[in-house]
Length: 388
Image 1 (cartoon, one colour):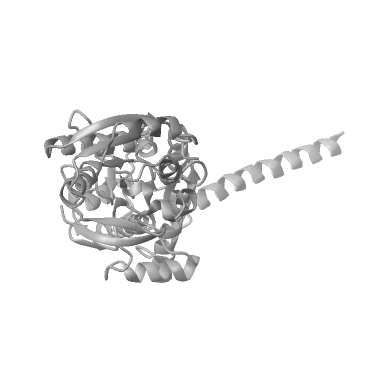
Image 2 (cartoon, one colour; image 1 turned 180 degrees about the horizontal axis):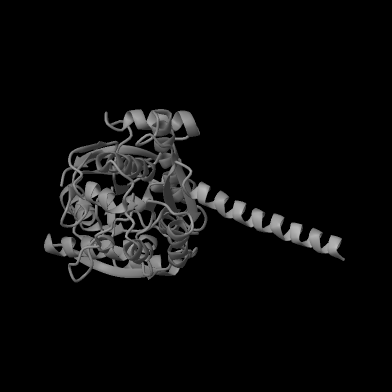
């Protein structure tokens, strides 16, 4: 009995030692010497190609920096969480990244709705959040004018691109009667449509019809028939490529021959596949960069060499967001969240691949240019640059 008791006590001692060792191992992984950065990204779901573009570009930026010795003598560890293109999942994703993975900053999300869902978590935990691509104005500044002080972005805003699109319709296409087709559950689509409509009216134009759809819809013919009946000179579709491709295709099949115009949510290699190359003739969209611009071309070549495909604008914005964060950590000389936030807030004349970026400390928004893209036989062509 005593012998068995001794074995039991020995077993308990070994078990306790294992538990202590396990705790030590966990602590060691948290303090492994790497700088942990999170990615709250749309890696599945409706806009998964956008999330993958950003992921690829951020990986490219961090891998390049790690080859140079990392930041502050440490390697960057990029930890991603799939928000599944869903706002609720985005909240869960950023919560995991901050509370379980112990990241010092988060990149993402891609869409405005998913980013807005992440903002309260970043704010409550006082962790910097940089969205590469969320263009809705309320991502950084609330309706009441209060600043989301832990949130930044590397992209322009919907009020700017909405105005660019409206001015293009009025001054370049030289038409004044526009129909608008909105994703009624998406903040990006609603915000961009509101700005476009306001600016069309301010320029002496008319909104002939405003119709709604929901992301994920496949059949738009009944609504497009109403749009056609309103006799517009142009149809503005501020949506994402999955629906836009089908809308353009079905619109052409119904005999809508006027231009379709949209925003940066159109920029995907999937768009010609969904719409059909010929159907995209006489369509235009506002975007963040042109691949052949001198500041952009080296990034485009590096991206193509690594991934064997040409990057879209969202990839370029993801790269800029990653590089902005790297620069901020270097400037801060620390991974302290408050110091990183201050460095981001004071970003000036940062030379990104989508242009020179200066952050307005009052809004956390960058001042940037835009481009107008014209689709020709399924290929993007540059029409013009537009300065703010």
